[in-house]
Image (cartoon, rainbow, N blue to C red):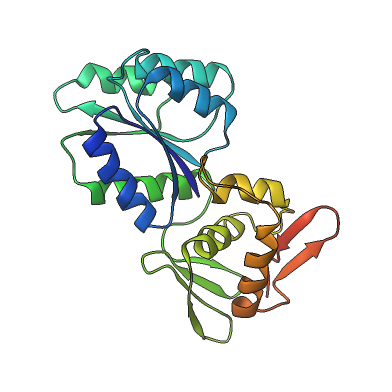
Length: 221
């Protein structure tokens, strides 16, 4: 899963980014409203964390512009604790959730995970598809034979995205956009390597290749 983090408090932003990366997210980080609007418009994100008090362009304006342009990515807004009007304005502009500062990073991560699962129409709890059980807290997977495998960060992000879109043909380019951060050297051919690694862990029969189209995770084992 790929996240856009928009926060001009750099120590806080670094703290959030580190926590999200430990949870297996790819995180792009910007610190002003103009760059935020551009990134949110041009790049495909699975969720966005947006501070409203931004330099160059207010966060609320950025959010309104995203929604006007058809950007439907779920957004968590960060507000000052006593700024109740910001919360109201944020929801009116299209926010999906909010968190008041100061907050615990663990709560932000929990809210982000819940928001993504709701947006992907997934039930809360362990992510299960075709006999696979993905332990998101420990970034490992249990296959249909009950064997548990540790996952690298990229393997985890790739498998989680595919499990959230079972039965859907996902091209290498599409998977690359949702697995890697913006400033990473994103070679779509590397996806083949990670697909091979995942097949060794979950079984060759679960991830099918659609020649010339991409990959598909079977809905049933």
